[in-house]
Image (cartoon, rainbow, N blue to C red; front, side, top):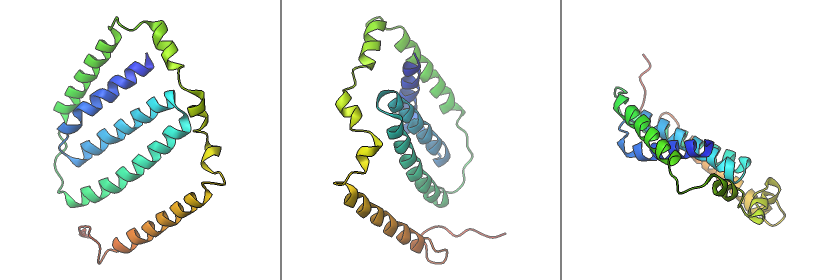
Length: 168
């Protein structure tokens, strides 16, 4: 029942995504979408994989949200229509998932346990740092450090692409 509720919220968040007009509501919708996806992946695959996915997506969203919010002028946040539409769609999807008679409760419980053990065992954290992938991870860390230095250089307040703020 929890998985059906999470998947109905996930579907309704996905369907309301094109209706978002302000960057604040779009960012909030994306963060909720990523959290629900991570929770759903924690049920099926593993918790550390969903946690890493959540951290990567939220980090990228924070950078994109800071850049977009500095470029777009401030608008009033009026999303009561989309909030009502979201609640209506979540309720309709949840009720339709609950009332389907095509799925038996015994088949849904056995389908949850049908994850291949070989694939689940390959997602352990010790598999990430092995002797064959150590140099790839080291090179990836160096690339990320070089990107960090480039972002710091570009975001210097006199020569960066961001809009200057008034200091009143």
